[in-house]
Amino acid sequence: MGAEGHSDGTVGKALDVLDMVANHGRPVRFIDLLAQSPYPKATLYRLLQTLANQGMLHHEPDQGTYALGVRLVRLAHSAWAQSSLAPLARPLVDALAQQTGETVHVAQLDRGQVLYVDKRSAIQSIEMFSQAGRVGPAYCTGVGKAMMAYLSADALQRALTAQSFHPHTAHTLTSTDALLAELEQIRQDGHAFDREEHEPGIICCAVPILARSGSVLGGLSLTAHTARKSLNDLAEHASELKRIAAEIARNAENWRFPERNTEETNQ
Amino acid sequence: MGAEGHSDGTVGKALDVLDMVANHGRPVRFIDLLAQSPYPKATLYRLLQTLANQGMLHHEPDQGTYALGVRLVRLAHSAWAQSSLAPLARPLVDALAQQTGETVHVAQLDRGQVLYVDKRSAIQSIEMFSQAGRVGPAYCTGVGKAMMAYLSADALQRALTAQSFHPHTAHTLTSTDALLAELEQIRQDGHAFDREEHEPGIICCAVPILARSGSVLGGLSLTAHTARKSLNDLAEHASELKRIAAEIARNAENWRFPERNTEETNQ
DNA sequence: GACCAAGTTTCGAATAATGGAACCATAAGG
DNA sequence: CCTTATGGTTCCATTATTCGAAACTTGGTC
Figure 1 (cartoon, rainbow over the protein chains, first blue to last red):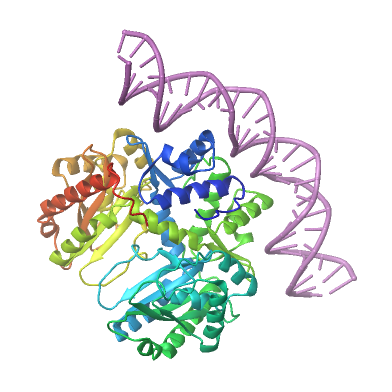
Figure 2: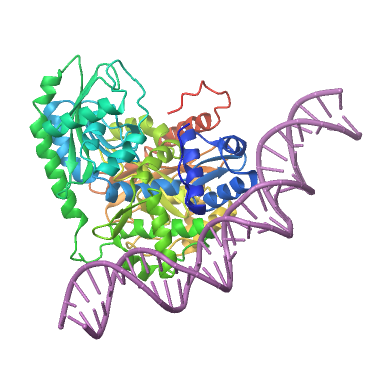
């Protein structure tokens, strides 16, 4: 489908294969992977062997299938804990979800896509890994637009080329120009709206989470259904969102630079 | 700090580096990695570059630090959803946690260690990524012993060599022989106990989750504090645990072999 | 301005990855 | 029972990648 990556070396290829397995969503046979891979039989075979050896893939010998390995879950724990804003944002986000009774998302930008790293809702109980890690489009979501609005020129350029501009609903912005105009507006307001651009009935108000330096750390959004809330209702929470985003950013910066070596807690 | 792997090729080395970053628990400088890596400067440098390029690591240019990248969070979503029992077990585990008021763990065995893939407690609300992905020792936990008891001879052998037999408490089994005897007992009972072997005051009753073929899919445990429950109290839930484990296994097998192509729901 | 430390680049040599083709199972078909 | 097809595994000469010592930046310190 999409134009995939400029693979660097063997490692790039291996990770490519990993993605292929991931995207399949269920255990895959060798031959199915072969069909959609650009690599010749022997090469693919060796890559799969290596990945399985390493625990990145799990090979079911009876069925001859490959699935993602548990080592990834292990890595994920660290990744989520250290490379995402979610753990720092948790208490703040929780409070907001409680207070508003609506759903709060925390997201980061990954290769032009929105990657949700947390989702909290006052009502429905726990979801989680089931939600964290999920990806969505940037050009037609509140968090996506909020983050893009504050990217540097070249980062924005890269992000733009990654957008499909598929018209999910009648309100979806479907051109670069329309999106750029919207981003300008967002910069003026300091917050973005999703006006049912991704899913009918779903609206949200979103703000970027910005580092002191101005770089985009992530996004924060408050989502609701049109049946219960209007855009204006959501807009009333904009300043609160901004306050929280700022606090998350502050936490993040303190966390990231603990300079003083704090006694090597390690595991 | 165990004896690490027989790296296969460049990919092995790259994943090794990834682990090093993960184990550090916070953003790392190049030089710190260099110090603990067996690779020469230039090699390590190239590996880091490749991984960063691929989004597996995030490189903060200002600080010169590397942290795990968001791509891992994305992969984690798929990995957890497809390679772990947790999503299938969710409703059952939830119900058990509610019913007993105690904490329920779902775990799998990864290279001789217990890897928790889910944790539910009736009281404390959501945790999750924060818990799923966490690893612990096998020889001194209920789930660990329950799973080991049903391993094939050679798998058990491999698992045994991975155990440290560190005496966490006065009750910890600290020798292979003691552990093997315990495993025999577990096979007879069909369930395992943790008699404060890992942490003082913490006890649990655990059962393996077994495939029809007899292979070990994972483990399920009910954990409590000695202040509230006794081993006998927990033992009363053993048959319930077995019933649930069996149902999880059944779900897992149906899920893994969906033979009939169900209309490609995709992501 | 000399020194040091962290990080980056170079480049020939060494090594590991490549992939076409052959091979081995197992299952299907005549 | 032999033939063919299919999915998976192995070989091995060729070639592209990776390796790593050393040279080179960059930026801070005395």
